[in-house]
Image 1 (cartoon, rainbow, N blue to C red):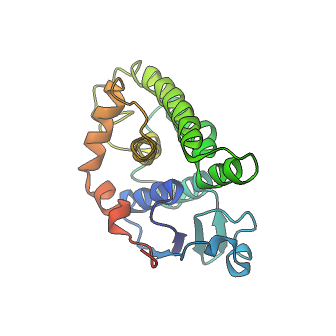
Image 2: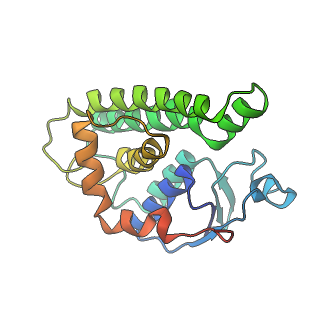
Length: 211
């Protein structure tokens, strides 16, 4: 199994964390800058997005689909909490990040804003901050309803919501978003960042070939 990635990709970061939580041995191949636009990569992932997971049965794309695959491949430990309703709540928080926040502040979106619409760098950063702060505030409100008392988003072990939140908090810092009021999210992030699976998955541990 091989994960085609870039170090700073939030989606790849999520997948690295999941591989570590599941203790799945996989090769991590970080691609050179721009390689996701090359014909070789497009033959794997026609969308040209990172990451892609190469398996014996073929390539998988989109981080959430990859995470579902890993969770079914190695069910224990599960990326979801126990209970039908709790699992849906965890998915809801994860989807706020991956469906509503991340697409509006990723590299592709910033490139279109600058190249097609002439938005300068500070305008792009302001746009990203707006959506990051709005999305994380919603996640904070939802996590504040949880009464489990565990260190992580949905209990005493990290799961799907955590591995989406942590890379997004890294993006929040990159764009200068105000996260000072996110009491629960900050506590969850602190707990995650000392967990071995998150430590081993950190972008600093996975340098890109071009630095």
